[in-house]
Picture 1 (cartoon, rainbow, N blue to C red):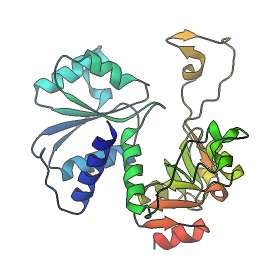
Picture 2: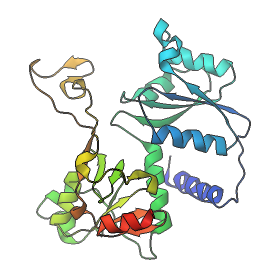
Picture 3: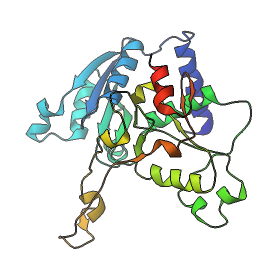
Picture 4: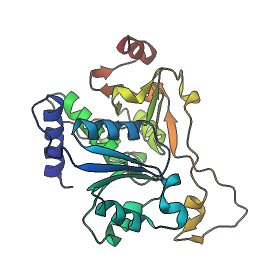
Length: 277
């Protein structure tokens, strides 16, 4: 998607939220194909689809023809022929959707609900919509500090960056935040360079039953993601691997949490509690 397409999508979403738009897909059928466990993403997609008037079918891989050797492409073709026009796919395999799309022979539409540690476009779009709702009148320059701010004369030190904004997978009741691996590193770099570090996430991301980041379950991904490239091992077989999918940024590194009801500020334990009263 280019910039204008993304902006158009955000404006359409805002219109739906305000009750000023009508669905053009009502009555059509969509299948939810979640090939790895998911709660919030799956429920969010199902709820959104039903609000758009779509007929939602829950595809269970364990009870499908996958067990008999049917390929994903063949399954998608079969779904297309019985009237499914789109399939929402969540997978732990990086690059699965792009590979599958290239092999399809029929125009069934694929929606990326997250694949491995490579992409989660709907989460990124939701974060962006939250930021556009909460941004002030001034323009801020945002950047990824993973590399640039670590340099002595990087943008963080030169004043080229006004703030850092990242998403979140889960936020604890005290503001500690779990997000894709590497977020903690960015937060440390921002703190060192005195650059404000914000989390942009919907309130549904905050789990008040989790007191601190220590209680957030962290997914441990396959060791083969580190030890193999294109199916070939690149290290000694006995090498031990730690491959977490997320890291936890402590609340003291977070300037604010941007939500749909406003920006939460420290003390997060108090501001989050007040928000959920």
